[in-house]
Length: 142
Image 1: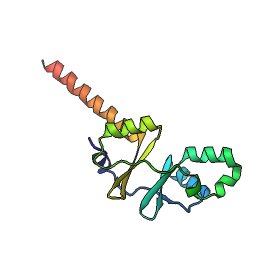
Image 2: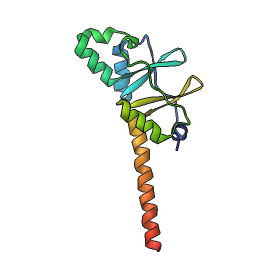
Image 3: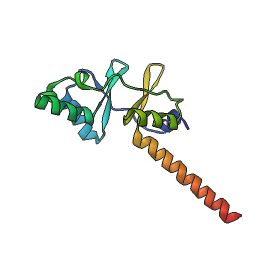
Image 4: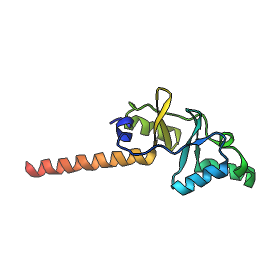
């Protein structure tokens, strides 16, 4: 299964923010949407990821002044990305190795989706449960 197949069934667009968005505004988006990260856009290009971790690190480093900074100044950059034809296990391995939780899906320099480690783990669990059920059915029929 590819990342592209995984995201094709999703409805709606990906919530993003611009490099000029304030940390305060971006944090409000995270809280309101109940999400952990936002792709940061400069025009049509993904230039970074702004996550809950970035908020915590910058608050510790800068105190309340961090909330007035632009997201472009505090985001994790550059953003690691995958293409739609990347296999789910490959993306999961990349996330594990690099200790990241979110990946923009980019096709021809345009973001077409955004996946979290939770999305990929859920797919793997569902697949394993399906295979186990098929194996149980096979054994019962034998």
